[in-house]
Each structure stands twice: as C-alpha cells, then as structure tokens.
Length: 136
Image 1: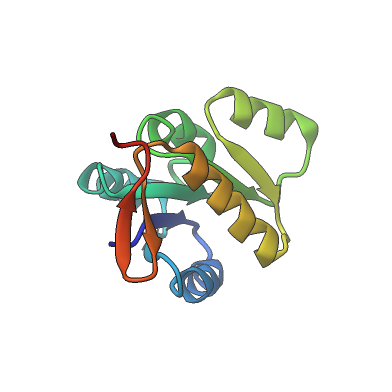
Image 2: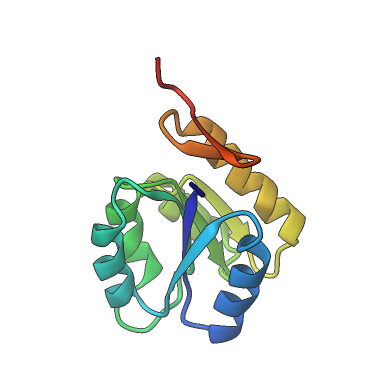
C-alpha cells in the first residue's frame, strides 16, 4: 500500500510534473481548484498522507483550505508568495511546512519524508511490504 499525496494546484503543468516525480514512490491524486480538493479530501480520509497545496487559486484559496486540510493530513504549502507575512499566516493557520516556488524537487521529496516520519499512524512502503509505524 502506497502513501497517498494530494496535489492541489490550479496550474496543470505543476500538477503534471509533481504527479510524474512523486508517482514513482507515492499514489498521487490531483485537484485543480479548492472546491475539487474539498470534495476529494472527504473521500480520502484515512488514506491521505500529505497535501501539497498552492495558495493562489481562483475561488477557494489555499489560505482558506489550510485550516480544514490540516485536520486531515500534514499540509506542505507550495507557493510563489515569498513574503514573511504569508508564511507566518499560513503556518499559524495549521500548515506543517512552506516551500516557495520555484523549489528544488529533492528538497520537496525530503520535506514529504519528514512529514511522513512525524505522522505516527502513516503506512510507510518498504519494498513490497507495508509496515505500520506507531502501531503496537
């Protein structure tokens, strides 16, 4: 069983690149806007490992989604907003991490691994076996 990553970004090219890169190790689901992401997150409860969330989207913004999503899974914000106020506001609202676009893919991969290590009940894939972490 692979960990599931939800990529929420209104830019199709960003979703495609992240799906291609992350798809080698994770099950990747995508949403092109906040409304779609809200629908998906309800269906994905219990299997969602990490949310990668863009802030600047039409309609429901990433800032509005952070408090809702952070109750379900760790949230890593991926945004072109590089100002300190944006970072502080989003991290204070419940985001677990923040990367400014453009970012290096190896750094993103490591930050996802950090969130998976911190999530005590996340199923981690090791070879062909699934190992439950935090279960006694």
